[in-house]
Picture 1 (cartoon, rainbow, N blue to C red):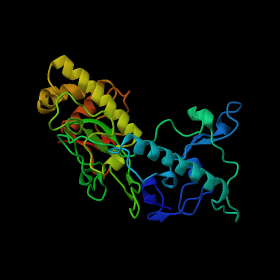
Picture 2 (cartoon, rainbow, N blue to C red; picture 1 turned 90 degrees about the vertical axis):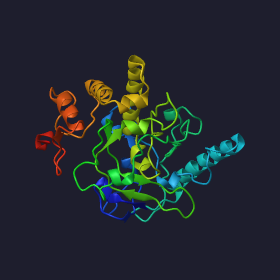
Picture 3 (cartoon, one colour; picture 1 turned 45 degrees about the vertical axis):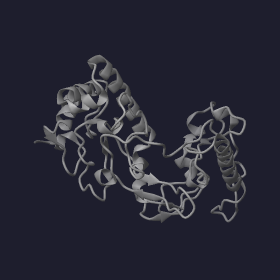
Length: 309
């Protein structure tokens, strides 16, 4: 039972997904949604499908591990494993089927995939971590489709990357309700990677300066990877220029030099979907857009629709 199907191009509201079959108003079952390997595409290499189970049903939300004693942390991690294994058992024995039966007994854990005895990951997936208090905090109003009527999120002049994913927040405790809403294609502000107070520290993942709400869209792996790429480039740039990160952001010439380096490495800073990174016009268009010399159309992500300021 999941909210916000529209963010994946499905019907709006609370949707009931099936494990294997396609339920009404959905694009398919949860198995194929999370499937990593479709064995039919790899003849002779894989005998069966492999799917990663990362659904609200195996979320663990009874205890924090951020500020607890080591013994409490260890117990919480073990309890979280039991939740996942219990969810697997439910899928095998009690999950409803469209034919009136229950359970999918053919589902099996795969210890060989993660090289663990219990077939679970070697480390838990933590959806929300501790974050910086940055020079710029990314807020819901800057990225949500409810507040941004155009094709893109709010323009970010100090952009060091791009991302796009819905604001997707799972339940965090008893009585809590998950939240989902659509976003516009957004940028990654350099200011969100730099702390207000501490020097020589740069956020390199989803620990950048988001709120609890915007963490729901900036936590995704592609955005994390882009954040890390920008952080590494910034670190090298500060060493070469002998200026700290905040000084680089505060100096327009240094900021543009950093952005040009990212663009030269194939990192988009602005949303143009019709000019890929290997296009000869890529660097020029990216820098023109991020500096505000050209403005993207309000109803299109194509560069061809952009106009001079």
